[in-house]
Each structure stands twice: as structure tokens, then as C-alpha cells.
Image (cartoon, rainbow, N blue to C red; front, side, top):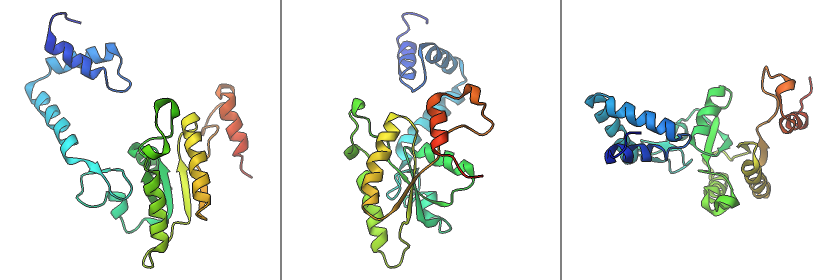
Length: 207
């Protein structure tokens, strides 16, 4: 990196804070922005500003939206009100939607339980999830939520969150399911780790 250029050093330092961006990548990005035309830099600056000023959480599912009311998925009258898919963050909605098979509603936890990181259930959107199920059950004009699908990662934090949620939701007489984990479509068993293979055996289906 070019030494003794404070503004460039500051830019590279801030870029290095982005997830998945190491020192070398931050340096390349910094040089790219420095050498870019003024029009691009201005457009990038405007996008960064608008992301912070225009985007907010949906008051119902806690995904991101620019709408003054509900987000696109919550406002869609064609979605199935009886099935709710719980994801860790808004990007999880995109991945589920790309499957092309889910037509229900969503709820974003905005994280997962992680004691090592100091994240407990009260730091997540779990209580609003409980209140949403209870409110929808008591609304005579709407349909009650009959199934909650937990679409969370199959890691320690995801498993911990699934266990916590499943215990709470079963008390509410709601069917709780979790997306299956195992061998990916077209996967070769020679390259599948033992934990993934174990999940595949546990989640086996009849053919």
C-alpha cells in the first residue's frame, strides 16, 4: 500500500471492515475507487447514503424494505398465511424464494443465538414471532399459522436456535418443521463430510 497517504489508508481501513474482505482485497478495492471516474464515485456515494436513509425493517416480518408500509412479501395477498418460514436474515428470504417452491409468509430473526458472541434470545426477533402467531390466531378475519418452517443453517448456532424455537412453538400447538440437510443434489459421497452424511441419513425419505 502507498504509505503516507492518509485518505487512501483510511478508505482501505474502512473497506477492510466489510465481511469477507481481507487486507489485500480491501487494498484492491481502495485502488479501484481511487482510479475510478468521478461519476462512479458519486454514484457509489449516493447509493451508500440512500441505503441508510431509505431502507428500514418491515414492521411485520423484519425484512428490509423501502415501502412506507409492509414489505413486498407481507403485502402480497396471494401468499399462504398458514405457513411461516423463519430465516436468520433477509438474505435467507432470497435463497428460499429462489427455490421456487415456497409460497407462504416469512419472519426474519435478524440473527441466531450465539452465547460466545453475546447474542441471546432477547436480542433476536423471537418475541415478535410469538406475538405474531398469537395475534393471527385470535384474528377472526385472518387465517391462523399452522406450520412454522425453520430455515436456519446446520451449524452450532443454527442448531441452538432451532432447539430453542421448537420448544417454545410446540407449546403453542403449532407444527414445527426444519428444512432437510444432507447430501446436495448431484453430490458425490466421497466428498461429503461425516456430519453432513449423518444428517442425510437422519432426513432420509421413502422412495
